Length: 447
Ligand code: SAH
Ligand code: SF4
Ligand code: F3S
Image (cartoon, rainbow, N blue to C red; front, side, top):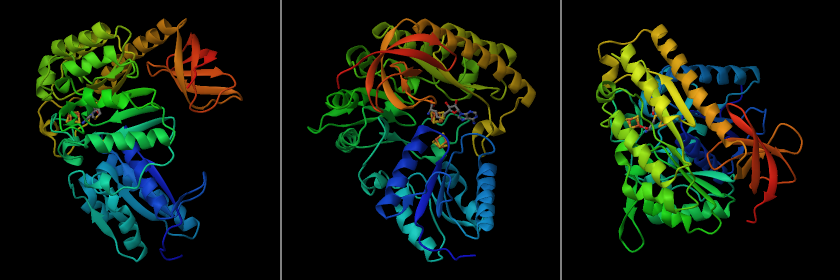
């Protein structure tokens, strides 16, 4: 078997949230700046970065089995791939991974991956290394500039979480809440637009907790950042995710009524419709305060599409409390949603609470919840039929001449026409399915 040498090709496999996807892109750019190129589709890479997620169970087991698979594929091909473990499992279990998996050359946490290049050099020289430090905002300054990006690009503006919901690992894996500086973000946004982005999705574990100071030193909230970004001429659409009910401001709500580039879509997780469960989750909002917030968004932007996250089977959740979640869902009528079975995470308070719910009860509740959520999603899509809206083309469809893009309400829209990737076009929505809509091209919108 060939000894480890400096890798020529890489592949980053990102799991979990969009912030991990963003980090994965930036790790790729960093490796490319060192002359390591993306491995061609279908070929093994010399360096594989497993950019992991720790949010729900089996995360760690999955990492070990991915490592095992890479080692086996390498053995069959007579080579030894260099393996890096990054992301939230790396942060939480770095030492153990190093001890248990000798094939892993480096472990690098989400706040330390700007050091990946040096770590690759070390690994090539036979030195394994771990870096799970959390220096405040150090990595962004040390990363290479953005070059080529898709029409819809991510921009991480805020990281970390101080909320400590009792079920969640994020405050431990991502650290305390920090906001990236205003001027850095405007500069990166400009670069992204120059590199081809027409839509930016601003990312943060609690993105609406972002705050900063503008170039005149005035304090600005998240809505101020959005207003500044909306001034960028080549940028057509702005989205953001994930926001927290407790960080919502009057300014951000008002922005939805005033800024045309801010898309009519809000992902606002609620987790449960039961105040008792919300309290046990340490969410510090009630079902009613959440519903009132949504009303305020609807008042300024009546067509806003709403989305949320839900957990079923939190310890102690009774059938009646679960029914309150269903009632909330039926009241809000979400356009989209993510729903999960509660998963006990090591080190979190909820993992040792009394009243852990049996798996079959969780399965049954999740099915009922998803049936309701799917019904509302289909109804939302059906209600869009007949509308003409702008679609941003993100990729080619399966059939020749077919394109796939997103409506302002984040629905996937398929249609045919003489178009190109990144075009903004007017499409009439003609047919609705649960997960997408079929459309007919009306006209190309002038850029
Ligand atoms: N910061 C965001 C969510 C980040 S995690 C927020 O608070 O809104 C994404 C989602 O994963 C959460 O909203 C929650 O629904 C889910 N989640 C987090 N921890 C979980 C756990 N232990 N079990 C099941 N779902 C979980
Ligand atoms: Fe996790 Fe709660 Fe923080 Fe969201 S707000 S990342 S669910 S602790
Ligand atoms: Fe997963 Fe970490 Fe994101 S745990 S959801 S990758 S913040």
